Length: 220
Image (cartoon, rainbow, N blue to C red; front, side, top):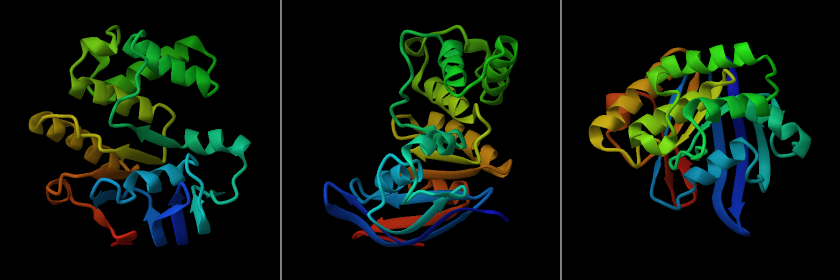
């Protein structure tokens, strides 16, 4: 299997304070990986280094063949296009419909043909069971429906890795299970999913590797 992420002796800091040290990671395609640990243990900080939102203080790190320790700012958009990012707080444009939210992303990543864009949006919405809600605004949707739209947005550019930061944190149990069914099916289809969560039951229900964040270290 292809290796998508390799971290060797990495140190991560926030405001000069060491958050994680001696980070050694290997991630291959099609994996389901859970990031487990208390608030402030470094889960989100690690994820941010994967897409260049937080610099790496020391060590060697590669994500999808990019050296993320020395990556130039102008290269970051190319890396990020190969990643799908799912935020806990959705980050949808509230004044635009579901379809317009997704078209906005396609335009921003270089798509031009309007018919192809329209067809592709409906294709990914169908993947997440939201093809009949394309005309609705985010505030007209439930939390679970909004999260499905966020997953559709993450899938738009056929990512090799999905980064999901507490994707079920704001959802009730049943809706959380539906979102986990969807994310797990994505990983089974060959896309690597890295997911931070406080729900220790998910790895038992949806098998995958576990990274435990504790005292500035990651235990695997």
